[in-house]
Amino acid sequence: MPDGNHPSGSASPVRSCRACGASLSAFMTFGRMPMANAFLTPEQMPHEYFFELQPACCERCGLFQLLEQPPAERIFHGEYPFFSSSSVRMQQHFGVLVADALARISRRPGALVVEIGCNDGTLLAHVQQAGYRTVGIEPSENVAAVARERGIEVVNAFFDEATAAVVAETYGRAQLVVATNVICHVATLHSVAAGLSRLVAPDGMVVIEEPYLGDMIAKTSYDQIYNEHVFMLSVRPMQRVCAEHGLTLTEAVPQSTHGGSMRYLLAPAGSATIGASVDRQLASERAQRLDDPRTYDAFRARCERSRSELRKLLSGLRADGKRIAGYAATSKSATVTNYCGLGPDDIDFIADSTPLKHGKLSPGMHIPIRSTDDFRRRPPDFAILFAWNHASEIFAKERAFTAGGGRWITYVPDVAITD
Ligand code: TMP
Ligand code: ZN
Image (cartoon, rainbow, N blue to C red):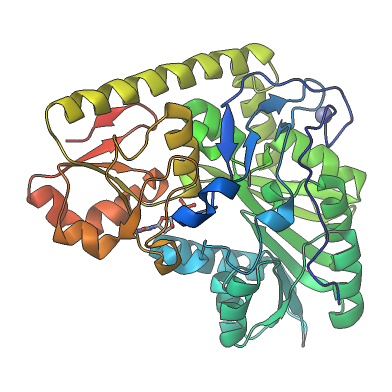
């Protein structure tokens, strides 16, 4: 079994597209950045790892990617602090995804479902309940251990072609391969696509769901850009890369999760018909000019405007003596706080539901992380919603905050104090 220990990222910037090899140049820089999930103790501050966060969009194939990505084993390890189960809405979403996917495959006795990046097993638990054999592939040992406690078989490894070959050899080919919010994490895109192709049964299906470039551009949600998201995927490059490895894109279905995602259904070439959604989404990407460098220049200008508006709003509130907290120490918040230069003088603390983050400092800007109970015990005057993608879930959970006079600050799509 692979030991989960091989690198798939590089600290030195790439100069050519990871999909097509064309030369790349960044359209902006977010500056020196820490790794998004690298919460730290004061003793660890002298050793904090930084890199330059520079996105580029390939002018030939349209693949949006970072020039530099810290090595993967610095990110996905025994203390990876993100748990899929932390959002009730995502748990429900995965239940619906699984029901939809299982309805599309033929149910053979002993049929296997493999999930790439199974995290704590939130999605595969739904598959198990439906009576299928399941295997998860997950490099971060701590979240994998939670999945195992649920009785899910987990291979502790990074996913690539070599891992896929071992999994297919050990467990057989999968009727269904699922990957959500994970393909955009893996720099070796061709090896991933080759691995998917090796792993899926000839009459099987692959379902991939990832944050969508088109939504990020439309909403100026620049906080989707952080070290773990080496790609912000879109339909055109996904179709092309997968086709090179014998997988046909059969459907592309927009999703509202994670601030706007795209679900890609893929099947071994020749085994399935292509739905109308593929051409529809390709046309939508052309209409949005995702292939035009000017789109990214305009995006950069909107990021700069958003930054100056957020700084201005917070410094005005501070000058009025208001207490400001952050809500949810998301990966996205690392980009916002570091790009906008917001530290503990601007934001007293960030409340989060994940115990592993409590008592630590936020990456780069060193804002203390506290529990959401602390937030409720001593609510601030204003709370910046860093988990804006979970807004409805959080607003419902924290009604007492607004009832007590607290106000939410959001910055996607625009900087605003919500009513
Ligand atoms: P995400 O935006 O990458 O999904 O990260 C979610 C983070 O937000 C995770 O640290 C847990 C935290 N969170 C809360 O603290 N409260 C909540 O109600 C939700 C949904 C998430
Ligand atoms: Zn390219």
